[in-house]
Image 1 (cartoon, one colour):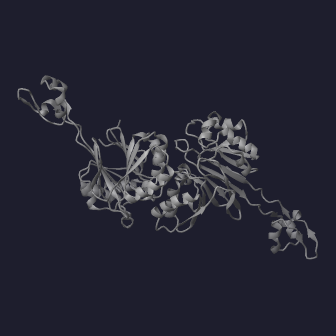
Image 2 (cartoon, rainbow over the protein chains, first blue to last red):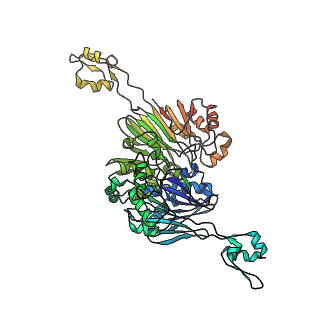
Image 3 (cartoon, rainbow over the protein chains, first blue to last red):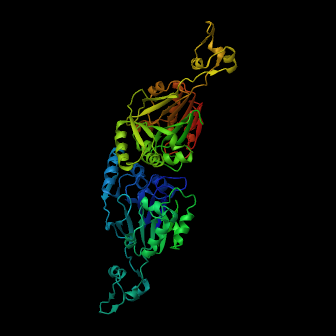
Length: 304
Length: 304
């Protein structure tokens, strides 16, 4: 089981090539899979990377361009064919819910599998949370409405030191409070400080996904302080004008946003098909932000 | 340039596997490409097999199940992005034109590329023809309306024997009639038989595509005498009841249809994901019809 692992299923831009597939990622967080964007071929990449369909219950769609969504019908049909029951929630703009809702009504009728659409807006909102994580949208700046997604782990519980808990006679029912950080009060009123009875909780991590967007400092505000940032880098700095004209960022733009936001690590992706060697983009980004790596199909990174 | 070459882009059934992709084929006939069905991943397979998007102007869709059509949006978007102008005709049932028409209106607006839908029915009809070929639909027998496609080369022109034409003083304007097989009449009224002045035209071929369908002898009538038959063989004979229940054929069914129709060669495909070794299906078919081969992704066969 992965604690917080990023899987890159596709990191190319609009026209697929033999080097890169369209956008798709899967976060594997404590036994649950969360897909971000769903370019064509997502279902096959799931199989190649041995990510189980049955563990996938949420898909987050950043915007309604084909290279970020055309994998949805095939993926959902396959899940419907394979699963007996179950629910999948697709977090998506209203138009996308209408388009794909109609298509699925036609092609996946009579299947014992429920697809829910959670309509999201181009705003700063919590769109999903559970005990482990919170997922927020934030605005991106592209040719069509687009959002980024920030996945933040919720604070974890402290670890009980069993020998100390036994020594101080902590009863079973008091353990939960200890794990949340509270002190222990003995029946005689003596207070045992939490630090004596527990060791610190595991570290939490956070991940933000920004694709597609032109460079905008407000994005840096939205992702301030995250551990890991994925930011699109469709072109290198030599094509800055082309990037702006098409609503995209350069690798240097991505690096500047990473620096401005104070993130720990930057992953760049959404590479234009004009590059045979993506290291041009990597070098361009590293001049500004050295802790940068290239996304690539099949890449798995533990973000904890 | 291929004269009449079949390219197998995908020959799996509904749920994709790491061995087979969903249904898609491309006939390469004298510089034009004709796609039959368009499962997810078709555009990527076009690139892998070095089939140029710019040579593709017709797509024929057999029926509206996802594994035969979900590659359309991605393929068409990519063609729209890459091509400056041009027209693509999709021959498809009415519901499919409506479903994909809406999707393309949303995702491919403002692109200088025209997609026409030619509405086909579940009948025996010529749905397309040009100087080189005729394409006919014929009914298949599946869970939803489905048709097969028969591609027949039109009779070719005879070859002029230059030395004989010169000897008999055939003028330039009379050559076309000679190539069509007419005799030559000299100014003095002497008739020179066509066989003296020309050699026979090149051989013509024909190809029929039958997927998806339950075994039905009427299919054999429809494809009677074709050179090459592609017939689905989702299961082997041991799963005959399952095949019927799901509107599919076994490999022995496919072979019996080939035998009944008097075709020269049979290609089987649309293999269920339950097979790790497709030779089970091949052996099953060859017991009935020895001239059978297995389809496979990347396979290219010259049908002339």
